[in-house]
Amino acid sequence: MYKILLACGAGCSSGLVAQRMRKYAKKNNIEAQIRAVGDAEIINCVEDYDILMLGPHLQYELPKITASIQAKGLATIIRLITKEQYAALDGESVLKDVVRVLDEAPK
Image 1 (cartoon, rainbow, N blue to C red):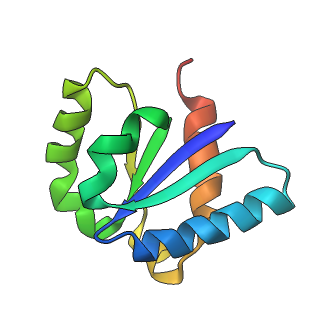
Image 2: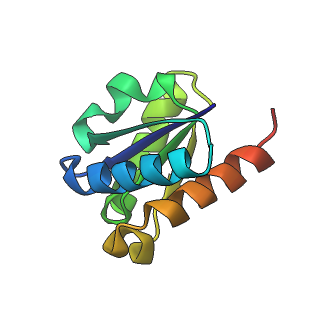
């Protein structure tokens, strides 16, 4: 099962992307646990997930978020959702990217 955490400023836009990801996952028999949160909640729940997908507007927070996750001793993969995916709320494309990244990651 893919465990995916999405984050944006307040969790609203990432919530819409997550909803579309769940719909695509169900339609294509992809086992995935997908949750969307605001950026303030990331550190409190990231340990339960394999990958953290950030909204593109959080790019400036990437070094801080990465350092916080590493300080917890976690190996969570962190990626940015592209501006195009985010603007289109393209859950299908985001999920395809996540599956590719996680399938290629060392086990």
